[in-house]
Image (cartoon, rainbow, N blue to C red; front, side, top):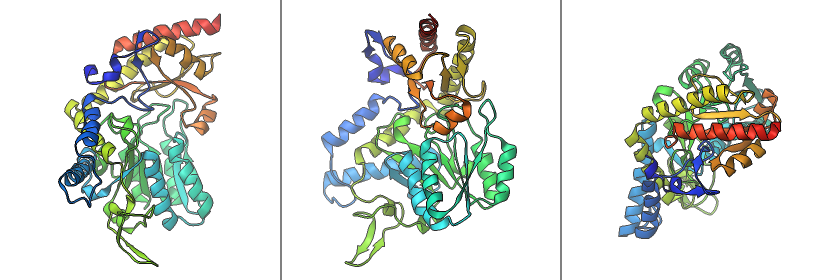
Length: 401
């Protein structure tokens, strides 16, 4: 598998690259790189209206990618798949288009204390504009959602429940199907942020029972600049457009316009054609490996790293639960800022992440300002965990000295 990723053959500071930052963005296999080159080198043309050979080929490949996404997440229909720039834009689309029409004064929006800013700030803006109320499902000391408090919040009859499938800081895997089922019983719609789960484990929107789901291509071996909003057809059909322009209309007059059906009405202007095609190829690649196998690999590496760091680098604080976690591992080295830890790890050829990970409220909840984060994916190995531990031992001695 590692041979499929050209960047993993490179060196950093004279050492082989050990890439442990896939939660920020994953690396790309050669098949995805070739797909981008193929579009730009062989059939670069705009889609949907070019009735010449390469234009029709571009349109076919673009819509084939949409169909691949539908199969990948088990959406009932490809028309329920909207291409966006990323998961952030997908969530903002729901907040703007569905939220501004359906949220009113005093309506409750339930989130969790572990949300990425992309699944927090859009709802803050909506609540401020519409005088809605934000409520939060708290977490336990080891980062697990308080189901008992969620049950109490549901008595408020919220209009919307939005939550992350996998925390980008805690690594915890939330019980998405159970949360969606509980929300549905009180009439609440659900938005699932699958940025950290799609591509790392099976994601099935029908089994999950969600109303909306957002994902980013670049975190699952695809290109940057392309994401997905899945929405139930009945909801998308009722929602007004997010942006206006070409391609999203059925007819235009000087004083009014009529919209094309979904998903076209949410994809104004020239879309990100090449990267959508590349995302489809990335999904083919992941399905070729098997997402259940990828999930087992990620969880095994995370569990191994958790246990070995605890045993071999005592004193380091690891956030999140010890078990049933994704390949995300955030930690704090006492006496060291996360950015210093990341800088020193880089000297060893190891790419980590340092900072608040777009989780500032969660950081305050946990009593820290920042963490260092290692995130594992299908191309990482146990030998790389050993290298990480050796680097952390050196870093710990440096700051203790």
